[in-house]
Image 1 (cartoon, helix red, strand yellow):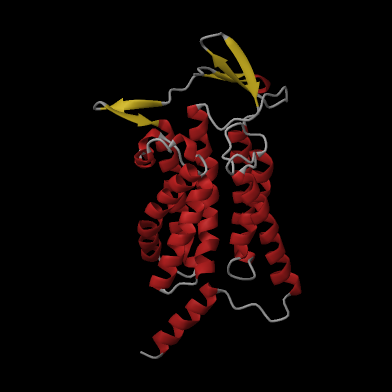
Image 2 (cartoon, rainbow, N blue to C red; image 1 turned 180 degrees about the horizontal axis):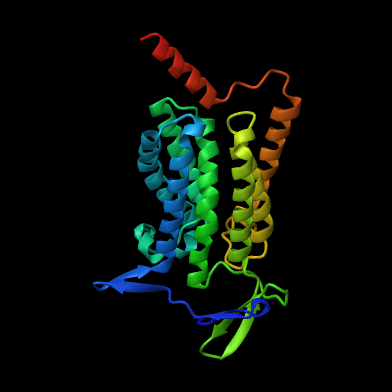
Length: 286
């Protein structure tokens, strides 16, 4: 529907394509950007995994298990809270190539996959979640630019400084909206920078994951309230992702406060340190 995208405050006007063809097969930029974000997250995790107590082989095995579950979770979440679109033709739930995924569904699916891989490889799940959370932030701040290419995930009309103009070619009218995809991308990028600087000082396994949950939940709760394409709980008018974001943020902060300041028992040693000690002991016993 829309063509040109403009940011008056920045003096930028663009008209990016939504995709391209290779041997007659249409490739969407949305998918390319999502894949690129995933690739960056994997590269980052490969460089950091030893600092969390596991190997690159563990990481690859985990990716093979977790990725398909995350994709399924993203699709189920979207379809479950947008069921009216699929009710007349339920088989269309499988037509994921036509679009329709949700980030919170992928996160839930990824956590399920991590539970499986942690039990299989006998790795501390909270240590895996710490590293995975950093990867989530990379994928999320890059992936939101797929929404930009699709001219979607924007907010309500606004006259704010950082507004985004969308040109309707049929009417020739430019309407200005909150660029919520940009808000979230920048929020996730800031979160990544902070947690990447902090993770070596973490006090317990799972701390980085809780900080991610609190940070992302706080930003998403506010940004979701500006969006015009939210998924709702039935006909209640309640934005499901906004509620989930707010609740997860509050719970994460409560757990952080309890574990850091109120817990009387000493916190367990970091998994990476325990793994190093065990490896040293095994070498001595050979």
